[in-house]
Image (cartoon, rainbow, N blue to C red; front, side, top):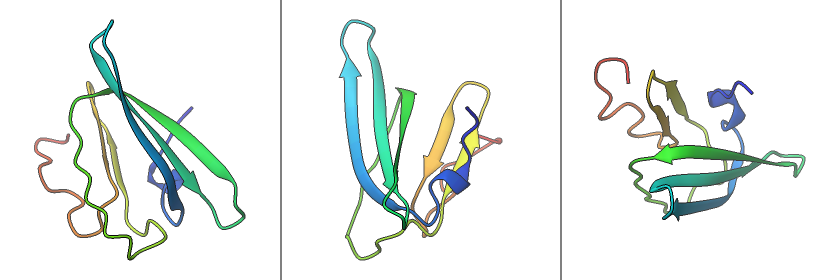
Length: 91
């Protein structure tokens, strides 16, 4: 399944779960978004190495989104004020 930034934009964040599998030492995130019709889509980000969460609950819909699929990692940013901070060399 090909996922792009359009899968998140103009949708409300419904649920975010961060998990860790101690047997494989691999972290992951489950991210659920809801469209205006009420349909919920859930995405699993496997191999999570880092995350930062700052939510002030003033914006219902995700208006800005940056999703970059690199060779060895995926970068997803839902922050409209800091979409590309920290990205170097095409990450």
